[in-house]
Image 1 (spheres, helix red, strand yellow):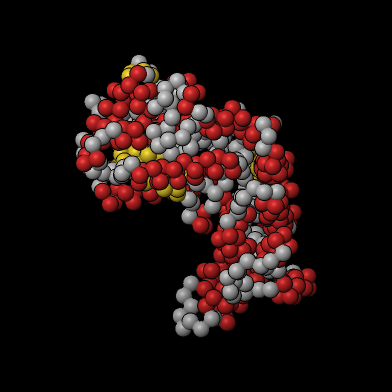
Image 2 (tube, rainbow, N blue to C red):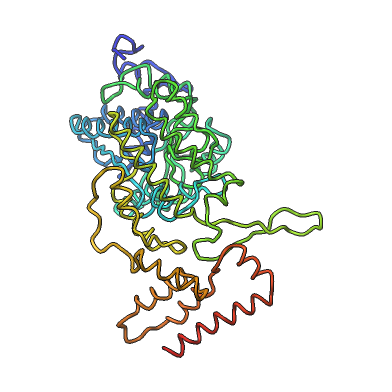
Length: 506
């Protein structure tokens, strides 16, 4: 976009002339400046890379740019949530904007710094889904939002609260986004103030300067003049046109609407049936993204009720088979519905192979991309080796990685678990001969190994009892046993006998 294609040749001329939502932009600028100068509370700008947060960032950057330098006494932090599974083209654009802000804020002597925040290493999408076997997110089990979005941003905000006492979080929320969002904004407004109380974080307040703007007015502002830090928003506009989608807002609490309505956000999002954003990008020429869309669609396929038993273990991660009350039957009885557990290890290893292959193929085609981080692979390997239901005795992840990339990672030394593949073979032979489940025997031995050499092995019997009380055997065996008091008593007697042997040996 050239200077000639703007309505205004400079950002300042637009601010001097344009009115939006019934107010002159110059008045909005003065409001921002007045609030900034009113106290020493630092500001945190929530930046998602979308049109609304870009507008907020632009308004504040310009407001500070036109203040006398001696009055720029407090810091403004631009915080952006990088879930590590954002739509690739959106990630590139966000990082470009953050780098530009950091560069030009130094040139313009503004107290603004941009900071991407990420989930904790053990709480990323792939560590939970491939490592722990969590099912892909759904409307009823959207485990990703808090771990990957709310917590990283909240931790950043709370860190600043601890350092400064109070902070002001500036958001691009608009009342026209939804009726529920308008209600949240109204409920937390402080009467007689430009600020609202944060819905969950103590000593944090929110400021929403474009709460009354419409989407069309946002675009009018973004496209009428150059950015105050130079450049333009044409790429952002083209991205919206190509994807037929809105942005995923920066989520700072549970009241903020998360993604799921085919918006820009995580390319792995399975809350919706179709990812219209990526589909739109592919239709407009980004065909290299087709493999990740196909992979995302398979994740969604695994969430369909009729497919759960194919993809997921019949036991939960705690080793028990679970049921919940379901529909009312003709006899007015609540029908028990089986609740499946984590993805089978075979599913996880297959998906890991596919994901790494997709990553390599995309990189080989000329796109620099990392779909899964190296430290995530280390975390996943640890979780596989010690999986509560299906320990990866063959330590398969290094072999999977090498089969795709033809080289080894710098895997952590002595990372293997207590058992190897030959051990597994021996335990399965014992299971076949004596009927003692191999996984149960493995867990009992692991307890012994973990307490070897300790003079006081406090709590060992409780740990043993916990393992013995887990559900062992096939789903059919477990159901038959649970449905028959006589079989249940026989099984319990066997477990009590095992526990007594440990007590005698203790």
